[in-house]
Length: 148
Image (cartoon, one colour):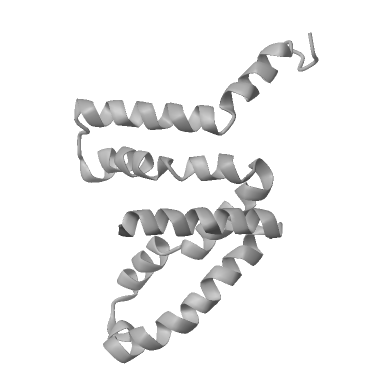
């Protein structure tokens, strides 16, 4: 149920950003600032000053990991550039990218079934995001870039 609720909320966010014609940075600010206002007091009351005593390397790693504001800004920009449905299709690449990154970083080897899933998901994103239309347009143009 949590996954379905998260998918519904993310889809709602995508459609809302598209309908409101928001810039990616503006959409990120609308999402991030209220989250900060709600989350920071709860976190501070739970952990006190413990985060301030962490090593700087741990803080930097967490900061890089939690670049949600940047990803939301880029996602908002993608919605404006390629549309809500195409941008939403790229969200499905999250598990694919995580799996591919785990190969060199963690030394994991995907099973044959996982490779099939990677190919199926990637193919689905390609067709859903309009990749076939882009290829058709490029094939209709000659090497000089002009229409044949």
